[in-house]
Length: 444
Image 1 (cartoon, one colour):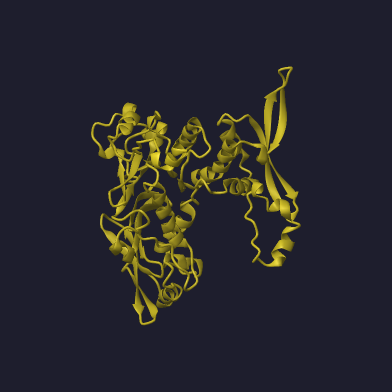
Image 2: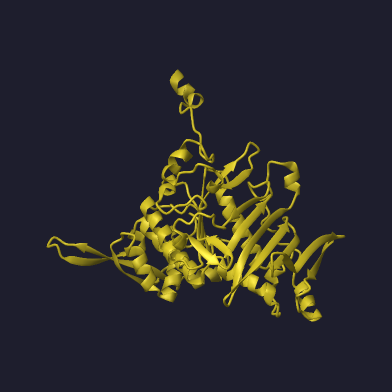
């Protein structure tokens, strides 16, 4: 479970900004909103509100970036996803910095870790993993990479409590290239380094693949549910969303190449520079397509069923179906799920339903999402510590702050207070007449 995430000098974030999942003293909806993990009370959900281009998405991108750095290896020379703040000369020269504090469950014990990475486009300059055996951090390992002539030199220092042979330490060092993390070397080597391996596993399995408006979630959900069945989850998930669906089936279908490449089927087109053998192989390819059985009333007021392919369903139905897979994965594996613009193609009431499904069924799973739907602020179960804002300052840098930091907040009137500008992070639009653009038209 994540306790906090910090980002500095990454995309629209200049100074360090921290998103905290630690619950406030507020006890409202404690059973559904809060995870009690030892001495920690952690929120199951955080909602990010803010103006367009204020940096909401960049917070999620930064969290995703840290996960990607932690678990993925790279070939030497492959560039890193560093995007320093662009509106300041010094920032453009500085490294990006990402860090997270989190709990890893080992049997019935929660262990607290802090993992940090500092990097630029070419190299990971610093990396550090601390474990908290008490209130003070104990080093698991620290890494530093520096320029050594025309090449890079990496050194790794291990904590006193780490029990590794010299051969194992050498294997870790040899397999850690300048553009990859020590953690990601676990993809290539097998060493008995439990203090770090459990952190690698947490990033790989405990942080779910993020969802954005552009994510092809129909394809991933089809693959997920056709293999894992899980109809005991997916059917009620859709039916309780007020869709009159009585059954879902998955049909294999052999499709000719032009049809497979159709945008309607959400399959990435093959580029001309790809090998011809790939094209030949796809000519006889079977794909899995979901079909939805709906119940309806006929003229005699009797219930009948009709089957529709996914292509005939509404965007909202497909979006809800697509979200079912990451929801199920997060809830079943107690993972962290990130969703950008959760309201995409969905009615506000359905978004509330999704939030409640997550909160009621989560044991240790956590959800963080961005949204422009300010009606969610007035949802009955929302609390001040759940709502966070992003706003750009006069330099164009993102500031991240919680609603709980304001005094005099009344949840019954929080939307009205937000629209009145009390919390910032609200778009100010004016002067709807575009005189310059249409001046020539008026002169005619």
